[in-house]
Image (cartoon, rainbow, N blue to C red):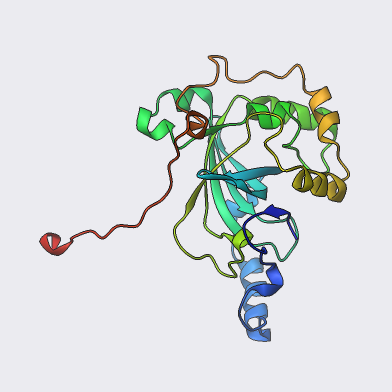
Length: 237
């Protein structure tokens, strides 16, 4: 189970309600896999392990496994799971853009985004199983990017289904923010050392223009989060 820090016991994949997949569904899935292209999934090129926290509550921290596709040189799109296991739950989506694209966003939009510089240089973002030389080359690019991520499944509070509104998430920006128990759990399971990662990445630099002041808005004492409201649609029909 992926590590979490929340206000209640986290749910596990075994808690998800529903009957076991029947033979018919399994055969259909096998047939579809053989006959259909599944091209968008096949374009996934990298697995990154990192951590997110809820934009309005840093105490709620979760492990986040990103399976990313290079849409083009300036944008990646990532499916986020709670673990790398075969029964992992799809909990969110992240879009990652270059500094150039981020700088062109409206100011209000920039407040939804976070930076990756500390995650890379602090050693807490890594590519499981990838040799250090190749990993550092990939992360040298990631350190200069910005990300926008929403989680749909709040399993850290015990939800056994993706309930409620999508939640805006953020990433860490300095030492001492990541819960040490969560960190050590990941280090132990993946056989890595965040301190060693940080030592090998000292040469990596972040955005060339520095971190934009509108990114990581929680650092200024404010937060953005999803809100449900009724919309009058009578005049549109």
